[in-house]
Image 1 (cartoon, one colour):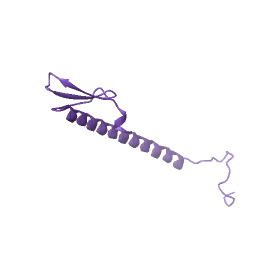
Image 2 (cartoon, one colour):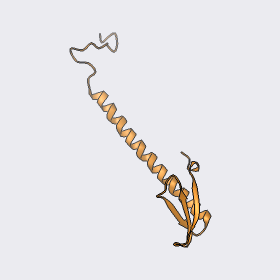
Image 3 (cartoon, rainbow, N blue to C red):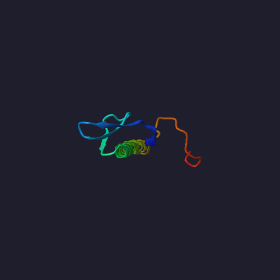
Image 4 (cartoon, rainbow, N blue to C red):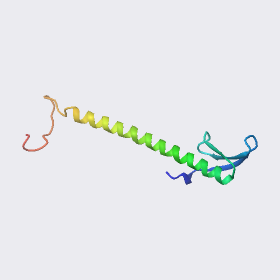
Length: 93
């Protein structure tokens, strides 16, 4: 996902004496800088890193689940002695 699809705002912070970069979709993330351009660049960089981390964690979890499901299918016999299974090939029939 592109970080260009988010809503950014740069405002002045009198308490900090610097510009404050914000992202509407991630209200807990911000960046302070001396110039508005640097504040915008900083908050965009933070959002980029957070999105990369989220995607990475999602992929790791997805892969772990895929491996677990694969293990279950590989380790579990598909047929029991009393079941009616189709043979995999004519030779095994």
